[in-house]
Length: 416
Image (cartoon, rainbow, N blue to C red; front, side, top):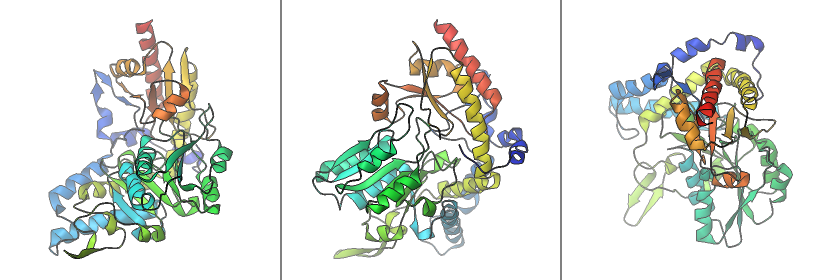
C-alpha cells in the first residue's frame, strides 16, 4: 500500500498508546489476549467515538431539523457538522452531495432504485467485476430483473487483479452504469479507480465506487478519482454501526427521484401531491441515526489526527510482515496477491475447513472471519466454498501476527 508518511512518522507511532484508546483490545477471549484480525468486517472503536455517542444521549438527545428548542438545535448542529466533516474527508465539492445512509448497502440500493431503475431498458447492461461484494451485485440484479437489463462482470487474474483492458473493453453502448470496489474485501486488491473512471467518462457511463474497504486506509478524493458515485460505511471507519455515506455528483442527485418517502424529505405535502426537498435531504426520509453520525464525525476527527498517510504506512509494514509469515506456513494457500493491495489476507490450509479453522483460532483468542465474505462469485472463481480471512488495522502489531501464526501451528498440529 503506497503512502507519503515519512520513516520518522512511523518511528514516532506509539502503538501501545493507540491501543490503550480502544477499550475492547484489552479484553481476553477464552482466557487468551484478544487478537482482533476481523477489521474488514468491522473495526473497533476508539474511546473518542464511544464518548461522543454517550455524550450525545446524555446531553443533547433530540430529533434533528424539527425543533427550535435548544436541544433540537444542538442535535441538528452536531448531525450536520458530521456532514461537513465527511464532505472534507472525501473532498466533495459541496456538502449537499453527501447523503447519509445506514451503510454502503443502502447507498448502493439508493443508486439502483433512484438512478438506475428509471433509466434501464431491455438489453441494457450494468458492468461490475468478479471481485465485488454482494452489495455491488444484488441491487443491480434486482433492478435488472424488473427492466430486462442484465448484469455482466469483468474478469480478474488468479492473483486477484482486475484485468483493466477487459473491463474497458466491456464498456459498450449498452452499459448504463459501472460499479467497482475500490479495495476488495476478500483479496485486498486496490483497483485503479482513476483509470477506470477516465474510461467510463469518455464513454458517458457513470461509475459507482464501493469505498467500504478503502475509506479506513486510503485518502479519498472523489474529485481527483473522477467517479460519479462513491459509497462508504461508517462502522469500518472506526465509527458506529448503522452509518454510511453516498456521495454523488450534484447534477445526478437533482435528476434522481427519492428512494424512500416520509418526513423531512419534503417541501410540501397534500393529497394532490408532494414536492420534495433538495439533496441531500431528499434522500434522508425519517429520523436518522443521529447519535451514530455524531460518532462517525468523531471517528473522522480521530483518523485525521493520526493521518491516513501514517495509517497507510503502518498497515503497509504490517501487511508485508503478515504476508511473509503466512507464506512460511506449510500447506497454506493465499488468495489475492495483487501488487497493490491492502492488509487483507484470505487463505485456506490443506485439509482444514475455513469454519473449523476460525473456530479453533477463536479458542486461541484470535478473531478471523470465515465464509464466503459476501462474495459468492469470487469464491466460485477460485473454486472454493469459503476462506478464512485475516484483516489488519493500524492498531494491530507484529506480536499479534506472531501469536496468530503460532495459533495456526497449534491448530494444524491438533488436526494432524
